[in-house]
Length: 79
Image 1: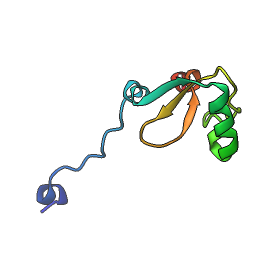
Image 2 (image 1 turned 90 degrees about the vertical axis):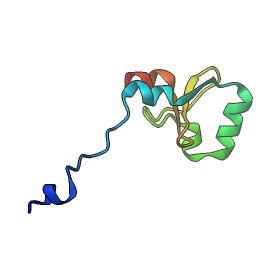
Image 3 (image 1 turned 180 degrees about the vertical axis):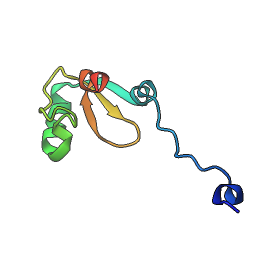
Image 4 (image 1 turned 135 degrees about the vertical axis):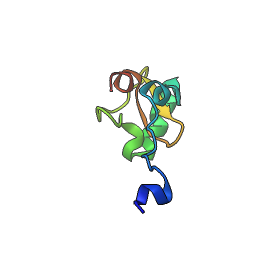
């Protein structure tokens, strides 16, 4: 027997659509206290994971719900 006949058809899992990925984020505008908290945490907390620029007061960011990474809202929407 062919493998497909024995176990059935196998297909890779489908990736979420771009709209679903953007919808699965939390949008916020960074204030001075949040920028200070991110700066104290260091590492990826202070940078957009797409363009790698540091966040500043007033930036609109999207934080992924599946992980703690954040990016500028426009960077994610363009990506």
